Image (cartoon, rainbow, N blue to C red; front, side):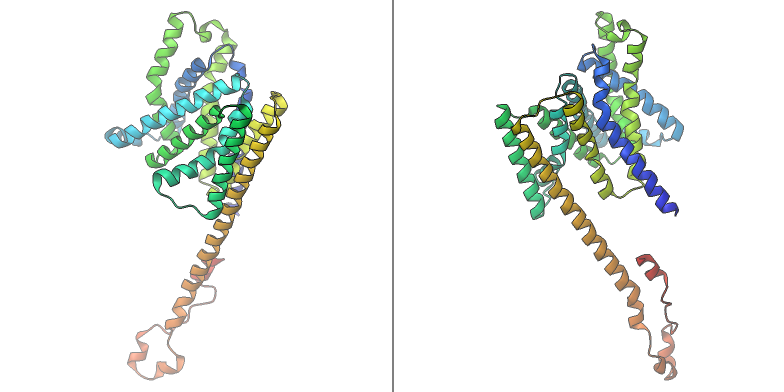
Length: 345
């Protein structure tokens, strides 16, 4: 019962995290007339403050010394900070310049880009269905490029920057709060310097936009940290396959907002491109679920085989009376409800 409650809580945390990421396009326009770079700088500065408070609450500080002594990890953190800067800044610019739908496309094709990077950079081998999904995604991008008269560069930069960020984070192997704290710490000094320069030149909207505007800029730290904390809570409670399905909530919400709320145009070629991307993601999802079921069935079969293995070495009851050699093995049979079989159920 407790396990079911944990999974239910994890599912709610996951829906909360991806739901907030999906609805965040409603927040960035509230920060106008601030420009994308000023908003980004505030996001970096205030995120570090929020994450530092969270780490103070959970009392997790020992990782700092280990990170400082590990130059390789420090270098990877710097790369992660650079890629997430590109991703955050471009996303804010896209939303505030009427390109929410194209931004959502970037996160739709992100899983396909991640798979392609795994093949090209890590030498991973794809199953046929995964190859079909990647090829379908490539055709979708080509159709969109022909329809636009140019490549959907916002979508591609968002997808590649976030895929690169995910790859680097995998190599860093740190917790969500810790890695965000390290990344924003790297970004803190240049971001704060830029904000102070804006104040000195009289171009800062934080000081001239009123208390309400200043509060909204400070809230960028909360908007950044809270979904990540929810995601971390979900990741330890639900299977990765469930998280993989939940990740599509964010771009679905973003796409819906772009079409229904921001009233962005959807010409036929854009619908065609999105339809192919959704087909590719459907193939990936089906293949992932099929592989997960197959692996689970194989694991259960191996457990069942392991549970039945001791019976093969049990002595024949009639042989127990034939002499001392026959008594060197334990003649007690394993109960049918023994530990090995309990694991299977």
